[in-house]
Length: 237
Image (cartoon, rainbow, N blue to C red; front, side, top):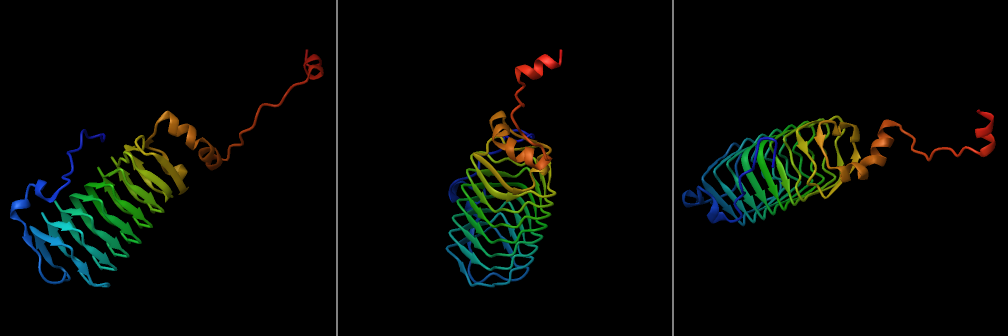
C-alpha cells in the first residue's frame, strides 16, 4: 500500500488486460519513432542494436520477447504490459512510463537515467546493474523483485514501495526520498547513500539492521561504556 492508498492488482495473464480483445499481433521490426497502439509483441527477438528511439507503446502487450542493446531512448509506455521479457543492455534514457506493469521480466545493464516512471509496477522482476540516475519515480512498486547494483543516484523516489523485494548493493547517493516505504523490503543493502534515506519509512527491525551503516555514515563511534574502578569512584566523592 502506498501513501495514496491501495494499489490495483496487476494482471498476471494477457487475457486479464482490459484491452486484450483489441490487441493485434505485431509484425515486422521495431522502428524509430514507431507507433505501437494496441499491438501484441510476442516472442520477438529484436536484433541487437535495433534503433527504436522515440517509439510509443499505448495499450500494448510485450510477452516473452528479447530486447538486447535496443535503443529505446525517449520511448513512451502508456498503459503497457510486459511479461517474461528480457531487456539486456537496452537504452531507455529519458523514457516515460505511465500506468505500466512488468511481470517476471529481467532488466540487465539497462540505461534508464532521466527516465520518468509514474504508477509503474514491477512484479517478480530482476533488475541487475540498472542505471536510474536522475530518474523520477512516482507511485512505483517493486513487488517480490531483486534489485542488484541498481543506481538511484540523484533520483527522486516519491511514493515508492518494495514489498517482498531484496535491495542488494544499490546506490542512493544524493537521491531524494518522499513517502518511500521500505518496510516491506526483505533486505536493504546499499553500496552508498545511506544518508539519502531521509524521508523513507522503515520498520524497527530494519532500523536495527541498518544501525551500523547509519552510525558509520554519521561518523559515530559505538563503544561499550568505560568501566569505573572502585578506586576511581572513591576519589570522586
